[in-house]
Image (cartoon, rainbow, N blue to C red; front, side, top):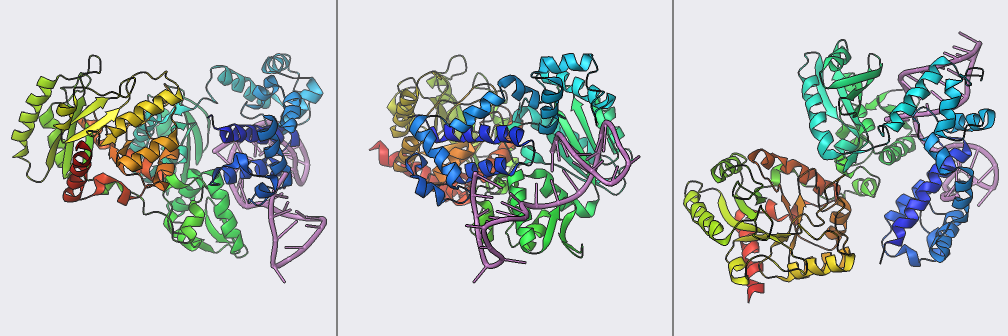
Length: 583
DNA sequence: GCCGTTTTCGGCCCGACTGTTTTCAGTCG
């Protein structure tokens, strides 16, 4: 069954967007009401498709008007008001409204005074200098809009970039800035810090007593292509790959307030400011201030500001206004996973796998350096074309592993394998050989085109196989390149709980699979998780931190992550699952 | 469009920047 709630949210979101245009106000309160309602509905447990108007009105942020629209949608599949707005703002006009610098007010004027109804119309008007006679518009505006059109057509501005592409660029820039003597602290903020799968632009926050030279340094970097706007404390640059980077320089003592502000999310910040107002304060990027006396309540660190507002500190990946503020106010925030708590990696390849690049000894050395208590080597099963490994080669590896184990008395080496889940849920090798491994990951690497029912069936079959400890990268998604397989999540997560099969949190930024929404749901069902790097090179063992942050985003606490457990407990759990279902 | 012991109207988060103005409106994050 397709998720009709998601369809509803999409339509309400569109309604919000078009209402901004219709109200001619970027801060349209009606539009915000729609967005608030979406937030509330998302956080509502139970089936909203079946709720009556009276029940809907009980929800915070849902009044009679929105409740009626919700019922209208579930009854007829349409929202009449939205259809009227769509007529008034056809796709061409909406595209026009996407241009940066062209807000609802200017859009209305251009339509009324110049008859501009599309990007093409606007270009024609610009070429004819038709904007100049209009009050409040001049040559600069003309030039700005012309450039915005160019960018739009390059597909630049509204395109979001997968986090795996953005993170290395951002980290490189952070390192560059941190190397300057006048810079005290640097932090990337925004959706990157919150670990969203795709990123619009990068927000870099710099603390410096003297901003001189910082912007110039950035502009001098070879990867920086264009710098359309710049001032002393705020600038925008574009990298050679078209990624927009906004840089803000602030005084060190306001770093916390600024980091909070620029990390967002917007909805989270609005809630924080409301809490400030309730206390007679004001929260902005300079600090938490007394509204009357301007006395500083807190500003140096995010933690101080949260504390002053009566909240426990909220980790960046949780800042989405999906219940974290209420939880932080009552001390009910889950004790989120700290990367340092992870004491083993349970999905790692060596150069024995066709696509692996580092030799076994190196992998083990690096795991030792990271202080791990256990490590599972998991080459690809033989069914995976080109990259898979034969039974004989795996048996030989097992011998080697047993020899190497002696050199690492503090780290238990598990001989594992990454099995391929076949079209109908079948797995590599035979049951006896699979049972001879210490640890089995099972994952989807093929048949992405099957429908939801078939996909669900094959995952359930894999979970019921007695050899399987964990399902690796649950949907097989590659962010920005390939959508994951569709699954009946309720059935899959229920089965995970019943069979004791863990769900992997795959730390590769290109995957971040399972997605945070899935983690959040799984957590409520008491599922056990394992955070893995799926490393194919020793350096990739270091990406465990992203998996930990992904857990934070999914509200997964350490207790439910099996590889935070001490070796004794972990090994007993892994072995127990196999023996109980092997018999 | 929602909300309510300072309630059924008048609020709703906050400030910087830009371009254009001569005190501010619009846009953005």
